[in-house]
Structure formats: C-alpha cells, structure tokens
Amino acid sequence: MYSLIINEIYRTISGEATSAGRICTIVRLTGCNLRCTWCDTAYAYTEGREMAVDEVLAEVRRLDAGLVLVTGGEPLAQDATPVLLERLCDDGYEVLLETNGSLDISGVDRRVTRCMDIKCPGSGQGDSLRRANLDCLRARDEIKFILADRIDYDFACELIESSDLSSRCTIFLTPAAGLLTPSELAGWILADGLDVRLGLQIHKYIWPEAKRGV
Ligand code: SF4
Image 1 (cartoon, rainbow, N blue to C red):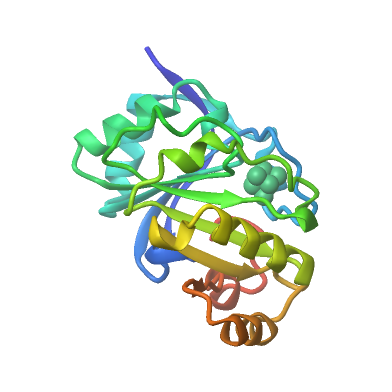
Image 2 (spheres, rainbow, N blue to C red):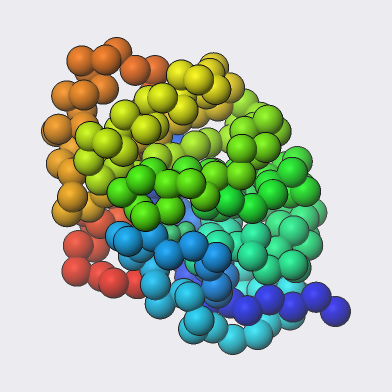
C-alpha cells in the first residue's frame, strides 16, 4: 500500500499560472529538497501526517473540485507521488503538478500538466535546475520564474532565449511578493517585447493576511 506525508488538503481558488482563478483542491505534500530565501510554505518542510494514497483520494473526492493541484514543499521528493498523480488522472481529475525543477519530471503521468518553478539567483537556489527536465517539456506544461530583482529577470531572459522556451510551453514571470512590484516587471516585459505572461499570485490579493491554507 502506497502512502505519503501530507501537509494539508483543502478546496480554494487557484492562485497562479493558467489555473489562476479556478476552483481547485490543493494537495500539499510535506518536505522540500531546497530552501528558497523567500519561501512562503516553510511550514510544509516538516509538518504533516502519513496518509495512504486511497485516503488522499477519498478526501479529494469529498472536496469535489474537478481540478487538483499537487504541490509542496516539493512533491517529487516523495517516492509515491507519481502513484498519486496517476490515480488522480484515472479518477478523471484534471491534475497539475507544481515542482521546483530540481528533480526528474520524466516519470510523471503524461496526463498531468507540469508547472515547473525554475529558481532564480535571488531565491538562493539559482543553480538547482535539472537541465534535462527542459528536454521533456510538452506544450501543455508551464514554467514559472519568481523574480526578486533585475538580476533574476536577466537570468530568466537568458534561459528563455537560450533554450527557446517560449515556443515550447507557457512561461510566467511573477514578481516575488514584497520584493518586486508588478508594474516594474510589466515595464521590463513591455520594453523587451517578451513572449511571456506576467503572473500575479492572486491568492495574495484575495487573502492578503493568510499565511497558509489559501
Ligand atoms: S522549492 Fe518551493 S517549497 Fe521548496 S523552499 Fe523553494 S519555495 Fe519553498
């Protein structure tokens, strides 16, 4: 029987990327192999309880959203996560996986949309990308860069151009909350004419005081 350490499962409005604004169930797994300076889910590093995959599926069913976002922490840090993703797809859910890009994504079920959060220098984890992950991107996948400053922006631009990312999947550039303003980032994107989307973490606008569970 497969089991996972689960930090929280709840129903909410998705805050980011192409699913932003949609009702979804969040399944947050415990544990992360990175330590980003601006991490807003540090409570998921160690807090959690063991649940069988069947128990997770039952809770997802109870919450009754067609879209399920599996996140962390870093979900792929747990061996049974691919099994959970496959079972969610088998049950007919639309499934998104949020991953930090440092672990192998090639074994993830093909029905899953993979949202890869590539770390920039300002996170303190700018060398964490597993480059081979870029080779298995599909058009339905998404890449997100969270930017703290102009150095991060230039880092993202260089990778987008050198790996021709804009033609391969959807790219989001998102300002790190409290470090870079949306208007400043919008100005840079406009000036450079980038083929990307400006991403805002809308859950931070809807529930500005909340520290978790949104
Ligand atoms: S990868 Fe995500 S969960 Fe892990 S430290 Fe960075 S922001 Fe936090």
